[in-house]
Length: 379
Ligand code: ADP
Image 1 (cartoon, protein in one colour):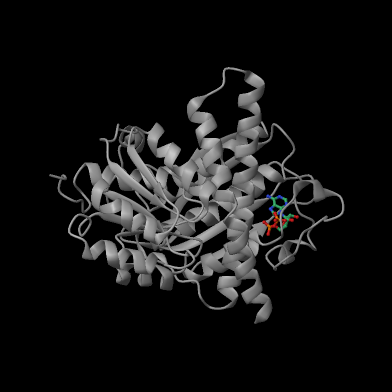
Image 2: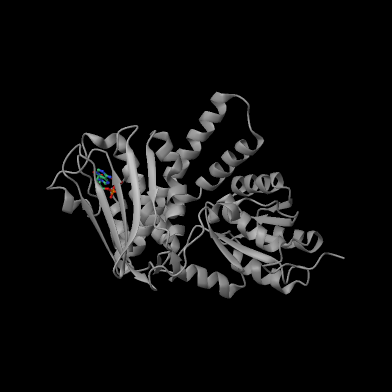
């Protein structure tokens, strides 16, 4: 039990320094250097930070699962959305390896009852492994189909394959086949164990097959499909058109975080996006700025010394100028219980560190288009 608690704490502490680093890289990207070596270095750093975030997230999830603290947010999910999210997250790694990726989805829409983020994590993990364990310029294919009452997704690669005696073991925690030779690939041996657990929590199965070393591998996910087949054919390319980033109206935004680097860099990113930004490093400072600045959106760190984010949000809600601002909790902890607690305390949204710019932007879009609560204009 102590080990599990320690792992949770470790993951939490390791995450904190990543937020300002990731922000810094965003700033470098947005302000752009023309020097090819600089931009290539920046891309490399982004990839490595992304990798680190993934490892830490896996560590956190494993400790959560073993403490029975991982819950799913179930909804009707289109398999296509799951695939898109997983592919997008792994595109850089697949491209870096010079692999070709074929995605084969049927015309008809396949839906499952599931947690979009978690299912994307599962497929993302399989794609990640396929890219990792396939020598450069390999072929990776992902296909989805309906088989009776099941939605079946296979991820196939032309990579190093898996020896028959290892096949049943790769799903065990901390198990890595060919550990000594392939250590260059990195990894903690958590991915597949987590992926299988998550699929099982959805009432499904995850299996592996391989004709042998050097001959590629195939991973198959089976999930109970919901609804009938062929309900609504989805227009091709539909998703992409809607994804284009729209300009966001200028908002007054306050960032509150005692991690000075994280707060300042996040503030600069919001400035670069065209917003008016103020940064505070403690609860009292935030409460001093708020009445005059009248922020429409507040990104508020929960774990601050002296006055926690839970206290700050209560004060902000009691002040007329910020009573109906959109207040976003930013924390290193992302469990369902934390989300509930944040909601009860008066937060509108909850983001986990390191905050991804796209997640923050989604909230800002909603606020500026009137879909989320905002304050009325000052004066
Ligand atoms: P990690 O990748 O961090 O080592 P995983 O749990 O994702 O951990 O995978 C466990 C092991 O299974 C890997 O170390 C690797 O030996 C093997 N493996 C996973 N996916 C593949 C694949 N697509 N091709 C060959 N071997 C794989």
